[in-house]
Amino acid sequence: MRGDGDGWSVGSDGTRHWGRHGAAGLLLRAPDVDGTPMVLLQHRAAWSHQGGTWALPGGARDSHENTTHAAVREAHEEAGIDESSVRVRGDVVTMRAESGWTYTTVVADVESPLETVANGESTELRWVREDDVESLPLHPGFHSAWPSLRTSVVPADEGTDQGGARTVVLPDGRFGWTSGSADSLQDASEASRAQA
Image: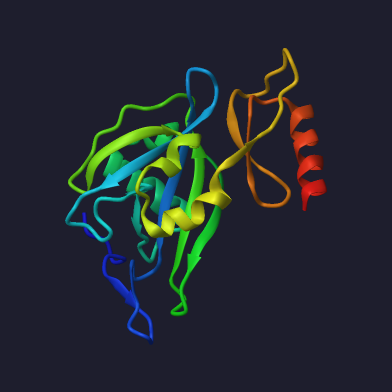
């Protein structure tokens, strides 16, 4: 279904970005069998802009949508993701153009890797361990944003779990991956502040 956001935003220097009202993508994480984080990546169809590269499901934001709605909708359209399974953890503007155009990455989790259904914009959809993401030929925009989006390990206390493996937003705006211990979140927050 074509929305009012489909189309190019053109800057005064002629630079074009897809999405008249900006764009958004969904960085969806799930735990692998050993609990380490995996992300859902889309191998972009050859005919698409930057085709043949790997990135996040995403696309143009319509005028009536916020970035979270746009990113989750696009993931449903492009990957068949069940919107009710997605737990949004935060978002970050990962690209900003001189024209005012922005790309927002919405960060979310699911309890386990979901089955996916590719539409015509994808050659393949794949759950990829975070440590393996950079081994793929990434879309240039995603490649530049990835260091700020990947997680650091948030240590969990033995025998405690308050919500299962998940992404957490750390005080410095970066992301962590935890098994759910409240104490481990506080430890990670203190460690993050010490590194800043």
